[in-house]
Image (tube, rainbow, N blue to C red):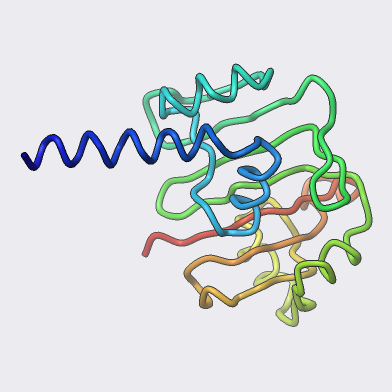
Length: 166
């Protein structure tokens, strides 16, 4: 009986996942309101491919190091997104590279200016972003929505969910 319950719960979760439009599912993950999209999960991989997303999985056997590319940019929360990134090990970041107004996006989600020093801004961006806006509503050092320019190329902008496993 317990195995049947697990199967029913799993199927319900998969149906709910597939029922959400891709824009909604991505927005929830970027805002730390849902799990990151992980191409290691066969159901997620298939669902993304059905949406026309090209998946690059740099390490299919290891921790997620994935890139998701859209054929054409999608618009979420008023910004254009063509590429998503998911990197995780003991913590990680699920992030979109976007074109748009960083300050307007931060205001829309009620993120606050990051008040830390340069080292802390980079740590809060998972080593990828120089975080300018942050939401620590989920609790500092747990999960936080972040927005900022890329460290490697400040002309590029990122928005995502940075999380810690412990």
